[in-house]
Length: 385
Image 1 (cartoon, helix red, strand yellow):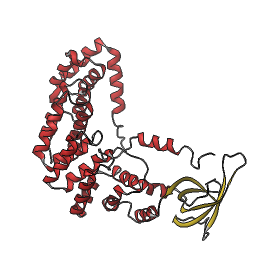
Image 2: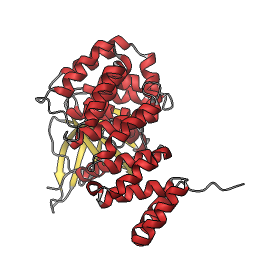
Image 3: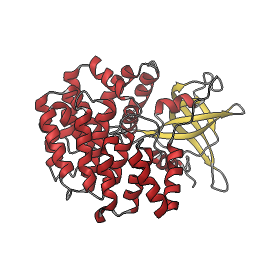
Image 4: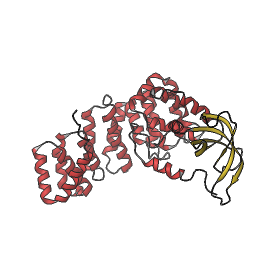
């Protein structure tokens, strides 16, 4: 028997891999939120299937759907309590939330969510009643649902935070009850039931609403091998530095300086530097951030990323140090050499230009390729009017 919603798993997997334009650097799950799905659908209803009839070939069928609630109405159903759907949904006591298109005056479901209870209905109705433009207020609504027992709800609330700008997250924290938020975050961060990919968001939020003593929870996470913290390290580090700037910064510098440390931890440290550079230089100033980033230049497995960040930050005074890497045997790796070349091509100095010309003589194809990639990276030119 064919699935009611074929291909949904593949669609969700693809959505999870696509990196959209969003601001939460600590959220690993992205994709369309349920609120957006409701707005895109023609009709959204809750109910159960009865009189299910498979088609003779077993590929599809029909069923009668008993409507218990309407999340998004459409004139096609009027006041009907039961409608016939062109889909085979096996009869059971399970309630389904159906997202439907309307074609030739007939509802046709394209997505269905089986529900344990009706919490989802209240959640969606509450979300839909919110002002779309008031993001801080929306985040305040979604926060308590981040650890809902209904996985579809907790995942959706997480996606709402993933799509939010940092300024909106900060504004939400300033307007909400910080004591209650802090208590919840501490509970979630201590719980072994919390999914590890959520630690980054929770750690950062605690950094914005917590007290200095709360940093102990974050340090425990970072140092406890039993918790196996892999994802979310950057958000936990950001929370630690925000709560205790000196101690947290010393911890981060030690992490970055340990070339024998696991790559994922050093990369998380680099991402933490990016975060403070992009959003909160009032916590850690630009000079300190640049100095910390240069620590990674001596580590061949991550030097290319550090060089690229320094290029994006336009730290041209690091030119000599970066060009010196070009002749070091440890850094004679194509990806590192390309990063050095990108920096030199972007740097407005005669010394950088001379280096590029020397490289052009040695490897013209590499220089040509890097120049082409840089052109693709450049924003489109503004047109006059």
